[in-house]
Length: 157
Image (tube, rainbow, N blue to C red; front, side, top):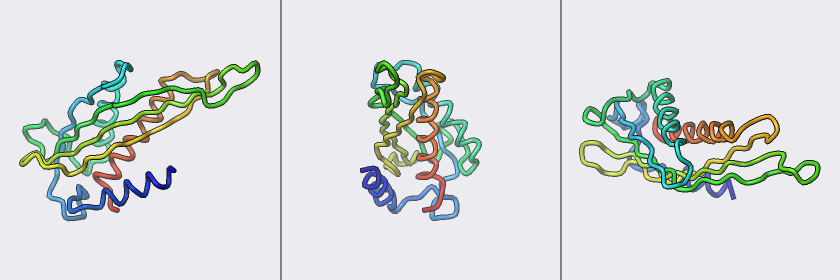
């Protein structure tokens, strides 16, 4: 199943537009709107907005600017959040959890509001129940999302 999802993302992402500075793109700047949250998991999307913004700044291929100065706008929405037991230890106590996050990610052309990228991203990460917290799992899943967004917007195919 993950192979099918990965293949669909690759095929679905190979359109006319690319934000790759080595490709056809004329996009040099991006605005990142605060991530919207459609779940009961409060506070996580604020951190996620910061993580994504920091990753774009560190990557350096697109300059992060205010929306009024941007060539492209990144819009993200956390649509589902779940934490489920992944592995049980002695006495049927949870030894490891999995955090599962689904996001709608959209990148729009700031000039004409046309869609450059519009896709749903599913990211999962696990954490050890004895030595880590749910925040650790969230952080790992967020990093996977950041990597996926950067690969789809700034890296070559």
